[in-house]
Image 1 (cartoon, one colour):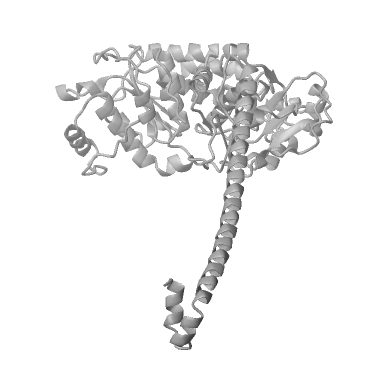
Image 2 (cartoon, rainbow, N blue to C red):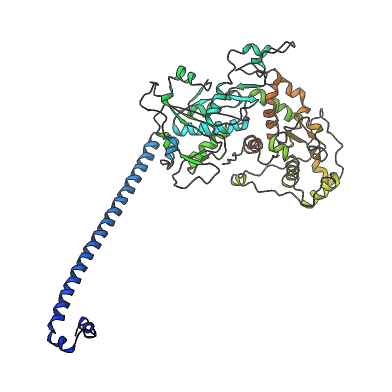
Length: 539
């Protein structure tokens, strides 16, 4: 008997006689229900098959879409690279392309020459401007665009501000029409309001300070832009509708990278712009805000990395007036000396000056001269008992420098002395274990009146033959006769930090200040260039 029959047999409403007389009925019902179950099974099967087919179609469509996207990316990269053979790069469209939306209809162009340009807004001190220029030169080369090369601003700086504000400030720095101001004030006459700031800052061409001829051989450069729309239209025929703006609202808004990634930026920047996105912009001018930041360009391509290294190597100062003055001071120091670059005069460096001075002093003794921790602690207790601490400072390894090792230096001549015309500040150490401290030491610093600065006494009391730039007035004097070729402002005071850096950069070994871009430039670029070593790239 079927299972269905068993269920009816066990049901109290059926009698044995009814079950016997109606025996065929449960079978027919079973068959009918079996056919119903079969039809239901087939219906469910057909529905399942339809669902499978829908899923398969969706997966196939998605796969084709992925293949199409991959093809598009590949062809975009190949198209970009084919137009840039000298410095190819593997890059892809940005996932954050919404940040690069055009500001106007790109079909209404005025520039009929077909030339394309890149510009940016420099700000802050010299070394921030230098880093911005390095990044701009690399980007312009990769985008195959002419760079609008700004001058160097020395003296009172323009602090960073969001794009629109910084653009307005930069456009108001021109001294055109104010040339008469350079001679006002010499005879105590009243200074007109428009002339009050004339001598507080100046501009010089980059080519006056560094040699850009090698970079310019591969990268088109154009000087003269005064950061105004009027100049762009009058000189280049570029109107607002022919400009693509990449406006930043914060200092760390945009970074630029040469590889494809859906991940957010791993560095301090808020957005990553993939360089191929910019390469496809049709506008005649791409106008950016700040480009300051050693890590703003993120490269994985070795070719692009080498391009940035090539540009940074060209940032060593080559002005003949500076070179001659630095060589004269080097000769006065005896040719062989140690160097320290101390930034303690302003901002966070002034706030952290005691710690930074002790750290630089410790590095000089431990890393350069080879004193042990115990020797230095004992020396510190003897010379500076009021400042002595029970433990050495933490000296972190310089990983970027370790990734770019240099050949061993020749032994330092510990019998080195300054020129006979320059006497040491204090009597020499007579103890044999302290005799290495008698070598000449040049201290480059932004401290006012460094000879009388109590923090710098840590060096002058340890190294009797310590010298500052102010000790060489005769060698410095020729720089006082120089004037800016742009606005006629005397350059002497503005050039002192550069000369200071060049002298310390020619030392046998140099120690810098933590977190200072100026010190990093001295040790990574100047010192290594003078030694004939590969420079260090940070970022």
